[in-house]
Image 1: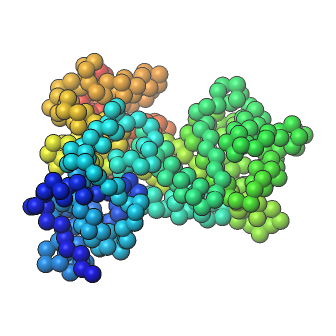
Image 2: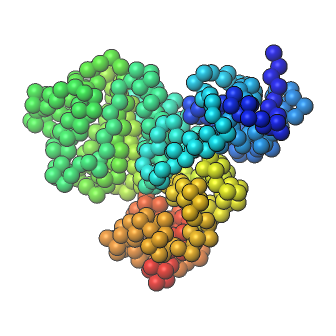
Image 3: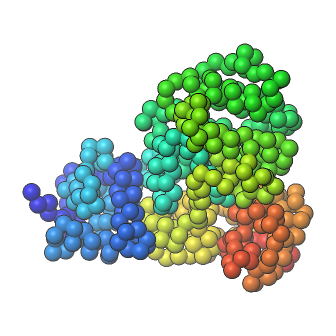
Length: 461
């Protein structure tokens, strides 16, 4: 049966009440299919609304495709559309519209906006909810991550500056892993205090305890830990004979903020060498390789590794590296559409120029745009005032530089050099890790106009 595309010129109240809004699950499935199609058919560039309309027309053999206006309704997830139109959209990308892919709307057309407003009571911080309409896919990161966690003995490294969405990406993978029966444990090394980081034995016992607790199984350190064998061996044995074999299902272990250890080189060298050994044991056909193949290890960090690790003892040159980039201009525009920002095309261009695609700052700005209490001109005018929406973030970045005078001086030089400068690798890694700089022709430059404008004032450049 041929599905007739929705005619958005006849928006009657009755149709609105019978309409549906795409669910978060449906939107994620559709977006993933769009990204895959764009990678294959559009040189990796996201489709414009006009391109999508033409593509749908060709795929569904319509004389005209679903209009850009209706496509915008679908993507904004605010106003209901009729179910056959949504089914057509899915069909064009080889998907079937299931009951979990949409929400029925029984109220009037204002309900979609009410749903959006209910999600926008405060700016988004930290991990986005799994069903958040404000999660932006950054292919191929999600696909690679989810594919890799199902490989026996996998080691995955996720690297991106602070507040770039690493935690939200991990949440996507954890959900998939749990749905397929995997156990999971997430340990943030930021929780390790100075006493824990005082020596290797304390740290590794703390790690074993944290993983046991995450898995909901008893702590057996007193029984299984033998200091005569050394800390690395005892930790490895605890995993091999207990944590990995406590159940038949694989264990997805996420070690977040491992860059904390970069300031503790004595611990880091032994610890990272141990992680590399775990990875190698899963790859070799030995008596214990089956146990280690149950482990899927995810290492999350915000800076490049500047530790002098032995090439064959480092986990940072094996496995799969996933680097989360800044938002592209198209992704910023897409997010502006979802926030119902006024003139999203213009907002997307201006915000991308000001914020350089920084995910957190972009979300923050669009939240205030959606509340109609800021526009782009006010953002720039209020930049260094207490009223700036970026004030807390900028003060945090300034505080980081104040604690590291050599980095503060490096940032001053970067701000005053239009073409950028060469930096010592350690300085580069640290400034890039907090998102302050990017590289252009191998020279360090401010990562966005916001930092250029702010630090040129507060550093008296």
